[in-house]
Amino acid sequence: MYRLKDKIRDVPDFPKPGIMFKDISPLVKDPAALRLAVYQLLHPFLGRDITVIAGMEARGFIFGSLAAWELGVGFVPLRKPGKLPYNVQSISYDLEYGSATLEAHIDAFDKNDKVLVIDDLLATGGTAKASCELIESLGATVVACAFVVELDFLNGRDKLKDYEVHSLLHY
Image (tube, rainbow, N blue to C red; front, side, top):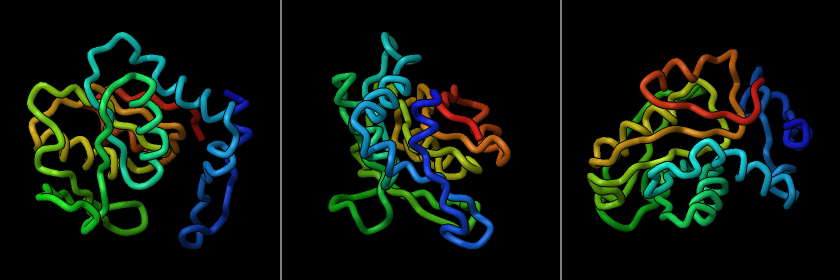
């Protein structure tokens, strides 16, 4: 994992003073590191009955779509309001530095879907928990959540205690 950790850049005071942002841009630029990250995200779930991957806007789209391609399953984007063209279901939640809303098409999942939720970062767990609730409100089952980076000191995993959680890098 040191190969991946070396590709995460710290950006102080972004998006506001006091936040140390973990920038994945160097990781996704490096094809070998990106491939390794996607493989490691999926490794615990190979052979499991996953029918779709969901990724949160925007960096979850990167890892989620690549993971879906690798597994040969569909990808569902969980978007910010006003970005999806069809009827949507919404959920609002608190972040460590504000609040947000995610949306999915009302027909994005069905009752037989087994969903792996993927994002770049687990911080306070608000986005991930809201994503799981949104997916379940649309009738699907969340199998697990997978993250490239987890900020352990923010205890986001506590909000996901009802789900299996897999993170590659811990800070």
